[in-house]
Length: 103
Image (cartoon, rainbow, N blue to C red; front, side, top):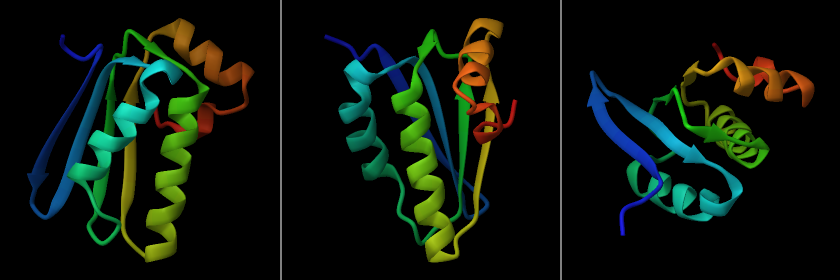
């Protein structure tokens, strides 16, 4: 059975770029986190791209915030870019988390 989400990683000029898509929700967050940990370490610069996910919830955003803080503590570069549907943007705005993702 295939995952209801997708994580792709590529090293671009020394920065690991990780692209997330699909269902980025609480039901899958543990597996998403495990797969992400296999791809990146806090010692390397990273860019997260959230590419028009089918669904996204607060647990995914909390994971992003946690990773962002860890990278900051380690003094590593962390960037995030998100392309989101309007309904997901509204969800984040209602939760007060719209500034956590750059869209």
